Length: 257
Image 1 (spheres, rainbow, N blue to C red):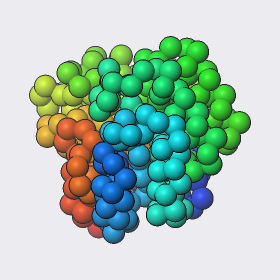
Image 2 (image 1 turned 30 degrees about the horizontal axis):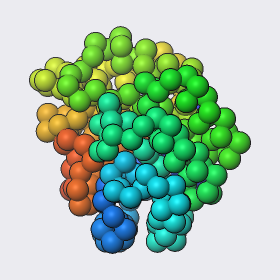
Image 3 (image 1 turned 135 degrees about the vertical axis):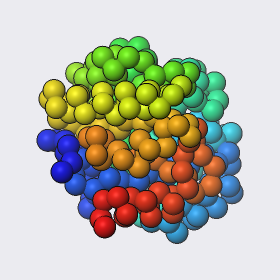
């Protein structure tokens, strides 16, 4: 029995929040040639979703280059749902892009029609979040509001409150990714996710304990109420990401055997 979300996010034939744990591969290439190769490698592994980490892309701070690259990317991936992320530097972004520039790129991506989901951080100011949320809703996309802590795992009550804060601020999907110092932190993250779900968090959720210690959370996500896990086909975008083929095999064993 899984702790399914009451509300679903449906993109084409993909249901986020249903019975299946979905695997997303982040694309973190630094230029078009590498992105093309990385995308081809990812597609061979049949991910459920893809995420373009535009903050990793050397020339993507130029709006036109970003949109041109998005068009090429969409052509290459067909109907696979695409998450567009321009991560803030404070929460693990791979380039120090200003808030104004990030907002410009995100709004351009929304208007392009090439993306399906936008991921922004809860730490952005309210005006930034409101502007993105308004554009997302107008375009019938979905929005992830996320929190990342690469140093530690906060207390469970903080994790639970953060998930509900994301919901209250308009997220279609709430995300928390934290770094464990010991296995108790991994259990704390999973326990907090279960409690959030049982306490009435109805939207889909991503809850990740990062690093090697947290690898169990990427595999067992559906057991504690999370709906999407992340894996790599080439370069990981966060500590502890497993190769997708290994994760697919483990998921098949855990959930379908």
